[in-house]
Length: 218
Image (cartoon, rainbow, N blue to C red; front, side, top):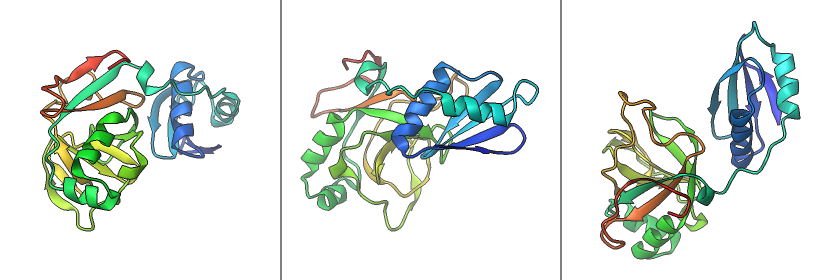
Protein backbone atom coordinates (compact mmCIF):
# COMPACT_ATOMS: atom_id res chain seq x y z
CA UNK A 1 0.00 0.00 0.00
CA UNK A 2 1.36 3.40 -1.01
CA UNK A 3 0.21 6.82 0.22
CA UNK A 4 0.84 9.59 -2.30
CA UNK A 5 0.31 13.32 -2.02
CA UNK A 6 -2.56 14.52 -4.22
CA UNK A 7 -2.72 18.30 -4.48
CA UNK A 8 -2.70 20.48 -1.37
CA UNK A 9 -5.52 18.82 0.56
CA UNK A 10 -5.69 15.12 -0.32
CA UNK A 11 -3.75 11.87 -0.40
CA UNK A 12 -4.19 9.01 -2.85
CA UNK A 13 -3.79 5.57 -1.31
CA UNK A 14 -2.85 2.83 -3.77
CA UNK A 15 -4.04 -0.62 -2.66
CA UNK A 16 -2.94 -4.06 -3.77
CA UNK A 17 -6.38 -5.19 -4.90
CA UNK A 18 -10.11 -4.52 -4.63
CA UNK A 19 -10.38 -6.44 -1.36
CA UNK A 20 -7.76 -4.24 0.29
CA UNK A 21 -9.63 -1.16 -0.97
CA UNK A 22 -12.78 -2.36 0.80
CA UNK A 23 -10.90 -3.12 4.02
CA UNK A 24 -9.14 0.25 3.92
CA UNK A 25 -12.37 2.11 3.20
CA UNK A 26 -14.08 0.40 6.14
CA UNK A 27 -11.18 1.19 8.48
CA UNK A 28 -11.01 4.86 7.45
CA UNK A 29 -14.78 5.20 7.72
CA UNK A 30 -14.86 3.68 11.21
CA UNK A 31 -11.74 5.45 12.56
CA UNK A 32 -10.95 8.53 10.42
CA UNK A 33 -7.58 10.14 11.19
CA UNK A 34 -7.65 13.65 12.66
CA UNK A 35 -8.45 16.36 10.14
CA UNK A 36 -9.75 14.09 7.39
CA UNK A 37 -12.96 14.52 5.43
CA UNK A 38 -14.27 13.15 2.12
CA UNK A 39 -13.42 9.53 1.39
CA UNK A 40 -13.63 8.29 -2.22
CA UNK A 41 -12.88 4.60 -2.96
CA UNK A 42 -12.18 3.41 -6.51
CA UNK A 43 -11.12 0.14 -8.14
CA UNK A 44 -7.58 0.08 -6.70
CA UNK A 45 -7.27 3.41 -4.85
CA UNK A 46 -8.83 5.47 -2.07
CA UNK A 47 -8.78 9.28 -2.19
CA UNK A 48 -8.77 10.89 1.24
CA UNK A 49 -9.24 14.65 1.63
CA UNK A 50 -8.00 16.53 4.69
CA UNK A 51 -7.94 19.98 6.25
CA UNK A 52 -4.40 21.44 5.94
CA UNK A 53 -5.06 23.53 9.05
CA UNK A 54 -5.63 20.35 11.09
CA UNK A 55 -3.02 17.96 9.70
CA UNK A 56 -0.55 17.52 6.86
CA UNK A 57 0.09 14.78 4.36
CA UNK A 58 3.16 13.39 6.15
CA UNK A 59 1.23 12.86 9.39
CA UNK A 60 -1.67 11.49 7.41
CA UNK A 61 0.60 9.07 5.57
CA UNK A 62 1.93 7.79 8.91
CA UNK A 63 -1.59 7.43 10.31
CA UNK A 64 -2.87 5.55 7.27
CA UNK A 65 0.15 3.24 7.16
CA UNK A 66 -0.34 2.35 10.83
CA UNK A 67 -4.09 1.84 10.50
CA UNK A 68 -5.12 -1.77 11.26
CA UNK A 69 -7.11 -3.21 8.36
CA UNK A 70 -9.74 -5.53 9.74
CA UNK A 71 -11.51 -8.01 7.52
CA UNK A 72 -14.54 -6.47 5.85
CA UNK A 73 -17.74 -8.00 7.30
CA UNK A 74 -19.36 -10.55 4.98
CA UNK A 75 -22.15 -9.20 2.83
CA UNK A 76 -24.57 -11.50 4.64
CA UNK A 77 -23.87 -9.70 7.93
CA UNK A 78 -24.68 -6.23 6.61
CA UNK A 79 -27.97 -4.53 5.94
CA UNK A 80 -28.90 -5.69 2.45
CA UNK A 81 -30.56 -3.90 -0.44
CA UNK A 82 -32.69 -6.42 -2.36
CA UNK A 83 -33.13 -5.64 -6.05
CA UNK A 84 -35.93 -7.43 -7.95
CA UNK A 85 -34.90 -8.23 -11.52
CA UNK A 86 -36.70 -9.35 -14.66
CA UNK A 87 -34.07 -11.48 -16.37
CA UNK A 88 -35.06 -10.73 -19.95
CA UNK A 89 -32.08 -8.65 -21.04
CA UNK A 90 -30.89 -8.57 -24.66
CA UNK A 91 -27.47 -9.99 -23.74
CA UNK A 92 -28.61 -12.85 -21.49
CA UNK A 93 -28.19 -15.46 -24.23
CA UNK A 94 -24.76 -14.10 -25.19
CA UNK A 95 -23.56 -14.13 -21.57
CA UNK A 96 -24.77 -17.73 -21.32
CA UNK A 97 -22.85 -18.63 -24.49
CA UNK A 98 -19.65 -16.94 -23.27
CA UNK A 99 -19.94 -18.60 -19.85
CA UNK A 100 -20.79 -22.05 -21.22
CA UNK A 101 -24.07 -22.06 -19.30
CA UNK A 102 -27.78 -21.98 -20.06
CA UNK A 103 -29.67 -18.69 -19.54
CA UNK A 104 -31.40 -20.24 -16.51
CA UNK A 105 -28.02 -21.14 -15.00
CA UNK A 106 -26.82 -17.57 -15.54
CA UNK A 107 -29.84 -16.30 -13.61
CA UNK A 108 -29.31 -18.85 -10.85
CA UNK A 109 -25.65 -17.88 -10.43
CA UNK A 110 -26.35 -14.16 -10.58
CA UNK A 111 -29.04 -14.36 -7.89
CA UNK A 112 -27.11 -16.80 -5.69
CA UNK A 113 -24.15 -14.47 -5.14
CA UNK A 114 -23.87 -11.91 -2.35
CA UNK A 115 -22.55 -8.57 -3.53
CA UNK A 116 -21.00 -5.50 -1.99
CA UNK A 117 -20.65 -1.99 -3.43
CA UNK A 118 -16.93 -1.47 -3.98
CA UNK A 119 -17.13 2.07 -5.34
CA UNK A 120 -19.25 4.39 -7.44
CA UNK A 121 -18.27 6.00 -10.72
CA UNK A 122 -18.91 6.38 -14.46
CA UNK A 123 -22.17 8.24 -13.75
CA UNK A 124 -23.89 9.58 -10.60
CA UNK A 125 -25.29 6.64 -8.66
CA UNK A 126 -23.61 3.93 -10.73
CA UNK A 127 -22.29 1.37 -8.23
CA UNK A 128 -19.67 -1.26 -9.06
CA UNK A 129 -20.60 -4.44 -7.19
CA UNK A 130 -18.05 -7.12 -6.32
CA UNK A 131 -18.85 -10.76 -5.58
CA UNK A 132 -19.80 -11.83 -9.11
CA UNK A 133 -19.60 -15.56 -9.80
CA UNK A 134 -16.33 -16.19 -11.73
CA UNK A 135 -18.25 -18.00 -14.50
CA UNK A 136 -20.18 -14.77 -15.20
CA UNK A 137 -17.09 -12.61 -15.63
CA UNK A 138 -17.49 -11.85 -19.30
CA UNK A 139 -15.99 -8.95 -21.30
CA UNK A 140 -17.78 -5.75 -22.17
CA UNK A 141 -19.56 -5.57 -25.49
CA UNK A 142 -17.32 -4.93 -28.49
CA UNK A 143 -19.62 -2.05 -29.47
CA UNK A 144 -21.15 -0.07 -26.57
CA UNK A 145 -24.78 0.93 -26.82
CA UNK A 146 -25.54 4.62 -27.25
CA UNK A 147 -28.56 4.27 -24.95
CA UNK A 148 -28.99 1.90 -22.02
CA UNK A 149 -32.27 2.37 -20.14
CA UNK A 150 -32.43 3.23 -16.46
CA UNK A 151 -32.73 0.11 -14.33
CA UNK A 152 -30.75 -2.15 -16.67
CA UNK A 153 -28.92 -4.88 -14.71
CA UNK A 154 -25.59 -5.77 -16.27
CA UNK A 155 -22.25 -7.54 -15.92
CA UNK A 156 -18.76 -6.84 -17.23
CA UNK A 157 -15.40 -8.24 -16.20
CA UNK A 158 -15.42 -8.78 -12.41
CA UNK A 159 -18.38 -6.47 -11.68
CA UNK A 160 -22.15 -6.34 -11.84
CA UNK A 161 -24.29 -3.25 -11.49
CA UNK A 162 -27.48 -1.36 -12.28
CA UNK A 163 -27.64 1.64 -14.62
CA UNK A 164 -29.29 4.27 -12.39
CA UNK A 165 -30.45 6.42 -15.30
CA UNK A 166 -30.49 6.30 -19.09
CA UNK A 167 -26.96 6.62 -20.50
CA UNK A 168 -24.53 5.09 -22.98
CA UNK A 169 -22.95 1.85 -21.83
CA UNK A 170 -20.97 -1.19 -22.88
CA UNK A 171 -21.84 -3.77 -20.22
CA UNK A 172 -23.75 -6.98 -20.99
CA UNK A 173 -27.43 -6.54 -20.09
CA UNK A 174 -29.01 -9.43 -18.16
CA UNK A 175 -32.32 -7.83 -17.26
CA UNK A 176 -33.92 -4.81 -15.60
CA UNK A 177 -35.38 -3.56 -12.33
CA UNK A 178 -38.06 -1.02 -11.48
CA UNK A 179 -36.48 -0.26 -8.09
CA UNK A 180 -35.36 3.41 -8.05
CA UNK A 181 -31.70 3.59 -7.08
CA UNK A 182 -30.89 7.24 -7.79
CA UNK A 183 -32.82 10.32 -6.68
CA UNK A 184 -30.92 13.65 -6.66
CA UNK A 185 -33.56 15.13 -4.33
CA UNK A 186 -33.06 12.43 -1.68
CA UNK A 187 -30.49 12.42 1.12
CA UNK A 188 -28.47 10.39 0.34
CA UNK A 189 -29.35 10.38 -3.37
CA UNK A 190 -28.38 6.73 -3.87
CA UNK A 191 -29.20 3.52 -2.01
CA UNK A 192 -25.97 1.90 -3.16
CA UNK A 193 -23.10 3.51 -1.29
CA UNK A 194 -19.65 1.92 -0.85
CA UNK A 195 -19.86 -0.96 1.61
CA UNK A 196 -23.58 -1.64 1.01
CA UNK A 197 -24.56 -5.31 0.65
CA UNK A 198 -26.78 -6.21 -2.31
CA UNK A 199 -28.82 -9.23 -3.41
CA UNK A 200 -30.59 -9.69 -6.75
CA UNK A 201 -33.92 -11.52 -6.73
CA UNK A 202 -35.53 -12.91 -9.89
CA UNK A 203 -39.07 -11.67 -10.46
CA UNK A 204 -41.38 -14.28 -11.96
CA UNK A 205 -39.26 -17.40 -11.58
CA UNK A 206 -38.52 -16.65 -7.93
CA UNK A 207 -41.90 -15.08 -7.20
CA UNK A 208 -42.94 -11.46 -7.15
CA UNK A 209 -40.15 -10.02 -5.07
CA UNK A 210 -40.39 -6.60 -3.49
CA UNK A 211 -37.31 -4.40 -3.47
CA UNK A 212 -35.98 -2.61 -0.44
CA UNK A 213 -33.72 -2.98 2.56
CA UNK A 214 -33.61 -6.06 4.75
CA UNK A 215 -31.42 -7.68 7.34
CA UNK A 216 -28.44 -9.86 6.63
CA UNK A 217 -30.50 -13.02 6.25
CA UNK A 218 -32.15 -11.82 3.04
